[in-house]
Image (cartoon, rainbow, N blue to C red):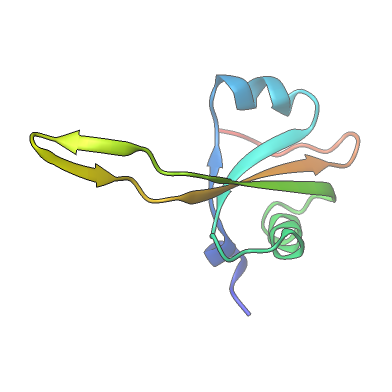
Length: 92
């Protein structure tokens, strides 16, 4: 069993996520091995809110070129977490 802080890597705060936050949906970067249930429990424990639903997506890493060498950024997992009506997470 992982710690909630091992599951939730960071809260993603961008223009798109700011528009979604108005409707109570937040984006998180999470561990690749985390399940939806793990993510919901971790968010509830860290932020003291009620989670309604969790949707996840694996974001594929982009190909990058450094001079003549090709490389690839690592894959990562993004979670869309919908909170109960009237609850919010304070974003600083």
